Image (cartoon, rainbow, N blue to C red):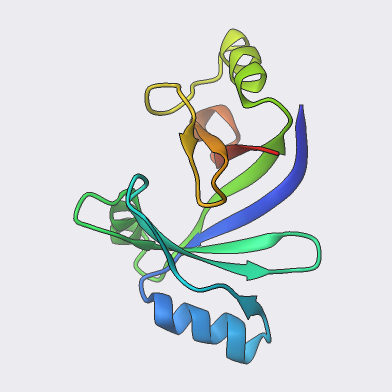
Length: 134
């Protein structure tokens, strides 16, 4: 069911500092910041030859990333994103197998303008999993 690793998301307390680290220290190609109000985050993507790193920073008071950063003040890996060919078929198969889909269970448009879903970390070895339609 899962395909290519799309990205690994890292929550960061200071987006400018994180961009500078990935761009200047590691020599990464970084995107411009993109506000994602539906998800309560601002994102920057670091392009790698085989995948991406997504730097996440809170956008607004109700950002889920703000709560994560309260527990992890220095930041840290927030989620991992896998591509799927058909997000609805993947959702239905996962739910039938007992996996919990977060939110209302309906895909939302993510940072790549493609449908995404999040799966409960307790169902996947303690890791928050994002699925993105390829």
